[in-house]
Length: 187
Image 1 (cartoon, helix red, strand yellow):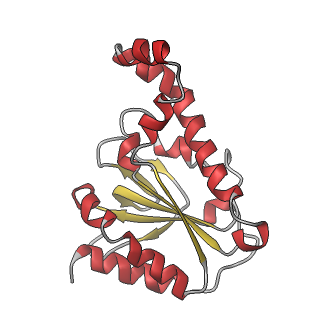
Image 2 (cartoon, rainbow, N blue to C red):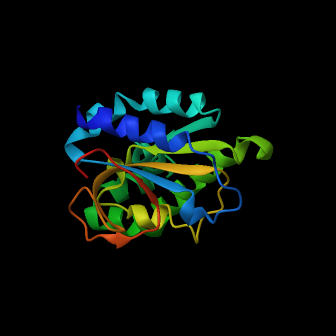
């Protein structure tokens, strides 16, 4: 069975389990962990995760961060944008904390768009994390201490997991996270 097929099957089993009420956000974050080289294949199969979610009678909302950096830069006035983009060090200085706050705002907008009565039974999926590389740490964006979120936060994570340590794109130092891992057979 292909790696993505295994992840879809693992997700189908997991999403079919009853949701437990009143869990802290750290236990309502699910990571679909896959090899970074599978990013394109994974993005082409997201609809299968949505279908499995809907078959489990849960709502589905997706936030694709693929164009997030460009969206954030577009919030700058033209002269400031040109000045920032001309200097890599300046881009990095602006990105922390500006880009992180922009991304958290996008997450909040996604959550707020769903009525509260439905939100607690909704899977909020985040895709396109590769866009964040070199600008912000994923752990800063989805930090449960910084977010208030209903339902389940499903993170499509290109990287590795060992115990509770996750490494984004296999390149950054890992961080301990209490997320529920959704893994294929070889993880």
